[in-house]
Amino acid sequence: MNIARVGNDRMDGAEDRAQAIHDHLRDAIVDRRLAPGAKLSESEVGALFDVSRTVARSALQMLAFEGLVRSERNRGAFVANPSPEEARQVFASRRLIEPAIATEACARVTQADIEAFAEHLREEARLLSERGPNARRAEIKASGDFHLLLASVGGNAILKRFMEELIARSSLVIALYGKSGASSCGHGEHEGILAALRDRDVQRLSGLVLHHIDHLEADLDLRPKDGLALRDALQMPG
Amino acid sequence: MNIARVGNDRMDGAEDRAQAIHDHLRDAIVDRRLAPGAKLSESEVGALFDVSRTVARSALQMLAFEGLVRSERNRGAFVANPSPEEARQVFASRRLIEPAIATEACARVTQADIEAFAEHLREEARLLSERGPNARRAEIKASGDFHLLLASVGGNAILKRFMEELIARSSLVIALYGKSGASSCGHGEHEGILAALRDRDVQRLSGLVLHHIDHLEADLDLRPKDGLALRDALQMPG
DNA sequence: AACGCGATGATTGTATGCAATCTTCAGCGT
DNA sequence: ACGCTGAAGATTGCATACAATCATCGCGTT
View (cartoon, rainbow over the protein chains, first blue to last red):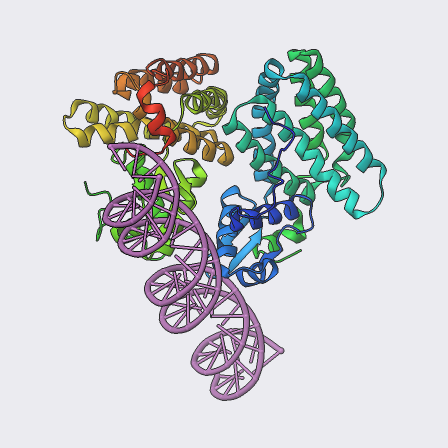
């Protein structure tokens, strides 16, 4: 089982160009180069990637399906601005799905998987020690990829796709409502999760995963922000 | 067979036409007017619904995203032909998600919800007593809608969307691998589920839901069909 | 007869043009 | 000053044209 490649690292080439653009934009949203509320016009995206509006439109439609982009008729597409309620639902869904994935992963994990995890954690640690916004962005993405790696090992392609969506939306939520801003606080917990996985200790693993999600959610301030409610309602960029 | 009842129920002049076509095709797939493997060419779909290929293509892309349609570059789109492994994953996902939804629904259900369920069950019973393929189709769809109703009451929009996808794919799986063909065997179980929901008996409800899914899956014959393997690999229609 | 191979038709991939709709803002009246 | 109105500009919605790619089939060679 090839879990080393969580995302399709293979660049466009002969592949679907709309898919490639979708992946680029998704990454940009996930590691917060694109802020919630930012406008993504078809012409602009098309010009940026040197394709026609047709292809750009297709990519935006995919993002809209995942809930990363909200598109309004005759108005345009905007990076999603999840409400506190949506944020709660994202984490409720993760609390439901991730422990199950972890449990399944426990039964299926191979030595090669363990090593891929270890390598991934080394990368996370390296990014954590680096300075600069680029390292921060890479760290955010890597943190999410850890969970996707787990989903890969779990072996259920459907749940893995659900997780991809949930991870992406989590990034948005954390960007909007995170108190500490650093989602990195969870890195140590990733280590613990890997250890439990290596020991195939289902109970401990499940508990750690749940705890990890709780910690992520505990870092959020989901109180409705007074001044921003109107701006959110009007869908203005940040 | 008339998939698109053209010139009919006001094809949403204001709303998105691609979405309307998506919904029609989805229904057609779910209640098996469109068999797994059937080809859906852009021109054909466009002609059927009297729109350009652009719009038809958009609808097909949505279906591909949900896993109901598999589209291959330069070849076309086909109604999905889920493998036994995919079938198992669909039901594994449902076993994970539906009890959680039901539990949440227990806490949130209102009297109006109960009555909506009761009405729905009466409709299911009526369809069950009727004869003819149309009634069968409607029954299949109604059976799935019961679960979506539960997801609505559950109140988590994300999980509800996941369920929509899982229900649709379940229909495909049952069409392909169902032994009895009648997914109706579960109607009585729906009654039991509603009763437990009315009593707000979380334990019983959860158990009944799980049992129900088990029964659905038990009706499947997931052994790989020898002669069809090649045809599946070559993606030939029916 | 079997195989390779190129012409041909069918289908999707993409770009572009026009129509429809929304936003903005200047101009006018109250 | 405020609000209304309507014209101009910007953006999406959709259809169509053309290019690229794939499947099919006939034909010639072995």
